[in-house]
Image (tube, rainbow, N blue to C red; front, side, top):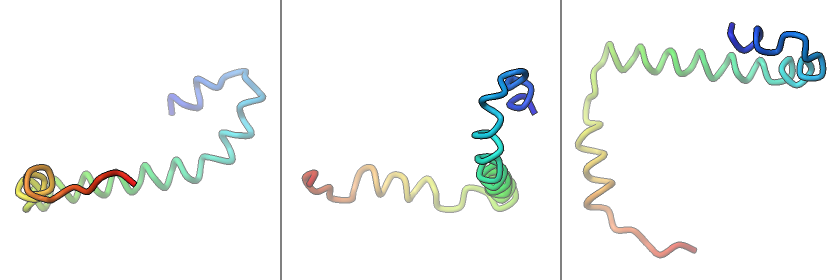
Length: 63
């Protein structure tokens, strides 16, 4: 936990860290599951979908 070590003696940062820790933990766990699923299931149609969205889909003017 490098993040905790970097806080060290900075007491004023502990409260915001404690408040945000559940979010940090949830995002890290979800990212880990997503990475593992990518390794296990492969890329699938990701390359074709990327090309479709980047090259073929019509873009509208910004609102």
